[in-house]
Image (tube, rainbow, N blue to C red; front, side, top):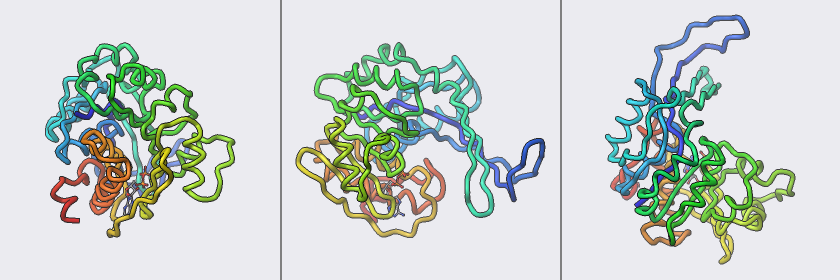
Length: 296
Ligand code: ADP
């Protein structure tokens, strides 16, 4: 089974002609409210593919928290690990201008109150999970506790987003660390990044993870481990909206690894899932079923 430990946010989206300056008010479109947050997105993406998936997260005791619980349950995610209360549900306030550019303010809210003690209290979920997947929209000390609480033989997958420099114990547990170009640059800090994604992958691998996956948008991805560096073929599609593609990719990869696939096999499948997700608008709404991935 797959356990996702991470964030759950309500995405509040308003279209604007232009953004307001300080002290100014502008009118926008009707408000759209979508379930989001990288943890919630990954859990829904995996469950929609058919993975037995549980989410460990924290939401507020409020309407957005109920929206998030409903969307997880509708996708078939086990929500026994979704804790309620302590702060308002995390929110992303998003304005979108006519060129499609976003401006986003995130209030982490309850995500910031998902503590190491919450992780320790979820021991039964860890025992039942072959793969545990996390991101960085929850406190870093909570992610560090996840690494300490992994069941024997279970595998840790991390997409360090939003990126920050990582301590050695977290890096060493990653199998794989999944990064896009921006995340790779932040994780590597001042270290020479090199010119090609193959270079980033090799330098990242030297920092301690057991394996590394670099996602390259329409170019697909590449995988790096002790066995070497290999390209993962991209899948040609008409991209409509790339929101959530990275979350769908990570979820699919984690699920296939838990099912016994090699890293290269799992990444090739994940690239098809990511490609399917960009052919539709939205994040969770855009995630494919296994049948849709087959049909691609
Ligand atoms: P992130 O959203 O984290 O930056 P990417 O944009 O690299 O991640 O997308 C994750 C994966 O989704 C890619 O590795 C690729 O497999 C797939 N993908 C993303 N955009 C496209 C696209 N335009 N065409 C085909 N596949 C895509």
